[in-house]
Amino acid sequence: MLKLVLAIIRRDLRLALRRRADLVSALFFFIIVVSLFPLGVGPEPELLRKLAPGVLWVAALLATMLSLPRLFADDHRDGTLEQLALTPQPFALVVLGKLLAHWLVSGLPLALLAPVLGLQFGLSGDALWVLCLSLLIGTPALSGIGAIGAALTLGVRGGGVLLSLLVLPLYIPVLIFGAGAVDATLTGLGAQAHLSLLGALALGGVFFAPWPTAAALRIALE
Amino acid sequence: MSNKHINWFRFASPQAFYPLAGKMIPWFWALAAIFGVAGLYVGFLVAPTDAQQGEGYRIIFLHVPASWMSMFIYLVMAFWAGLGLAFNFRLSGMMATALAPTGALFAFLSLWTGALWGKPMWGAWWVWDARLTSELILLFLYVGFIALQSAIDDPRRADKAGAILALVGVVNVPIIYFSVKWWNTLHQGSSVNLAKSSMAAVMLWGMLLCALACWMYAIAVALMRVRTIILERERHTDWVRAELIQPADEV
Image (cartoon, rainbow over all chains, first blue to last red; front, side, top):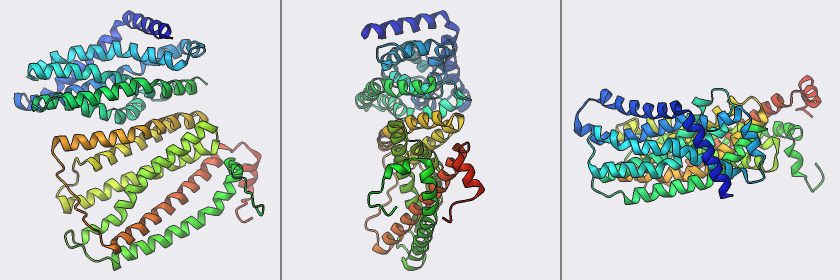
């Protein structure tokens, strides 16, 4: 069963690496959204430092959202998804593999890129480290919750907008604790509590999300 | 129906439920009107003016029931949706679809009346208080549910997809509520306290009567909507054709 998950991850990674443009454009979207904020609110370093956790996290949510429709759409279009649904192994495992692969190509680069952008906002070394860590812990939850939304809107009219309508409200707890962790570091409270809660959300999300996602995909495939 | 053992599953079929709902609707409307008039009478004429909040507090007679209903209807909606998903009852999905707009309406009403109350009391239309924020998110969840269902053309698929979304939402509602609550206390501390130390019994009665009125109204409206949905979805069947030519409500 682990073999199946690994095989799916390997396959999805290979497909993603063959289409690097998709990957890179989501990352650039992240960079551009983050750079828009100083232009919008002014260059005062104090204000920017205060805004940084929220801005970086909201941009990360949006960038993840942007990459979600591709999670199942390509496989759905060429019929691969139907074949995967027919495997004797639990379909939820296939979904788990796809979800982890999605995190590797969307969440992980965001987490690694965020500290660089944090520098532009004048975050301290501690805060940059916590920002990276909070994104590393939090983005799997985003992939998990997002997968449910992506499966529900698969092949539906206006899927992209609809997806954001469904998924963004459910992202709120992750946003609160993710940005809260960085904020707590900035104010000297320590990020431990936030990171623990974030970890709980991520574990819960990755563990439970494959079932509703698999159920939603089966509905879409009917 | 004289048989003592009523087969409740019979009413899981839209055809059997349609006339039953038709018979129940006037009763619920009547109850809604009675409770509403009684509640408003108690609320406006019997209940005394509040010592701290003046006359403005009277909006709670609509505000609190609306908030209760918005939360409760989401649970009921998720219950029907889950039932429909588990047992494949067509009617359950229709009930969930019929309840969603009423729930969204109550969530909106609760936010709106809250804003009207907040302006004179707190001096602001909107405060990022935990309760307000989670009510707003609840409204988003309703909107997402309605949008998802209306985007899918096949009603069976819409029911099932909506059911999964409603169940995921129900699991998330407490998580969202507590995270917003902690976010609020971590950021600024509870700046607003309703300070509802002890509500006068008359006010409580007025509020309960209004809550019952809202409840009856919600049931009546949901039943009317579900009847429309039944007609729309079953329009190809013979009984609907017969129904539309000669309404059987009087029978």
